[in-house]
Image (cartoon, rainbow, N blue to C red; front, side, top):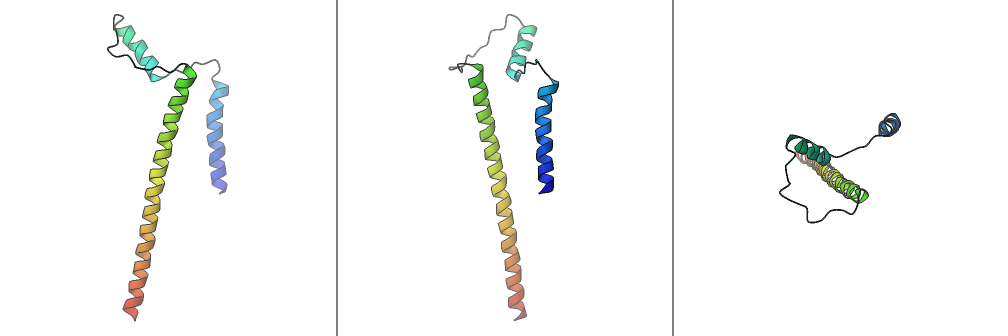
Length: 107
């Protein structure tokens, strides 16, 4: 339990430190960088597809992205937790079967 608190403290420090070290920075996404690179290579390029709906603001776009990431992380956490629980239950059942067969063979 002691190591868990140390790891949580390290994660918090790693998450907060860049906020103080990198000030006045604009964090952009890969889409913006790709758009810049494409227009730099071919200024006459016109996209062949336009989205049927655009979020009303940057905050909404960030919220949807964060929601997508949270749902993905929740799904992965659930899946790996389920698999770990199934493996643990199978090992326990195997151990119980081994003990039963040992008891039966001794009698």
